[in-house]
Length: 234
Image (cartoon, rainbow, N blue to C red; front, side, top):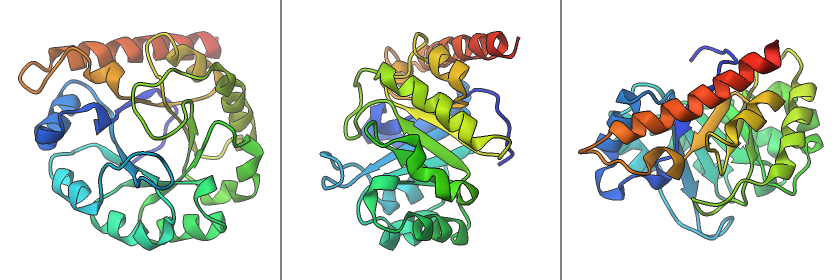
């Protein structure tokens, strides 16, 4: 897993066909996905229940790119080892999920994974100022976590810009999770984001048997993001 700031599209399998995850992962990769995003929810930290380590292990063999596991659970520390053993490349924990974020990030790296930290909409960028040297990715929640298909919160764009300023030249990805579309992608990329999680915006209109729309949707988001990246650089 090499580092660069080119826009990357990370479809969330929360919007995939739950009965056919393996082929769905293969389909989105074949259609151009850079990463595969796995939203883990516990019904406690967020109001929904999704997947656990056995599902992550089961789909790992179907994923050739980066498996990006987003833990919306509390407590998080007792489960880091299980998700790492299941094959996660990146494990992201929420800053709000426990009292010892530094310890959590150390544990993720010690398990052999890249360490991410997610920020809910009401959590300021400054909440992670003292752990910048522990992280490989910061995930900005641009919706309130717990459900797919929510609308993008525009007030998060200045937070992205602030994080990009705080990161400086560190090799840290800024990931956006929530409401990403060809219309919202340019806003966050111009502010400094480089990984775009998209669920319904990627999977709409397609299926495992007819994956062409997945590719069209991914290309639309990528083209909008890349144009914004070029414009910002100029």
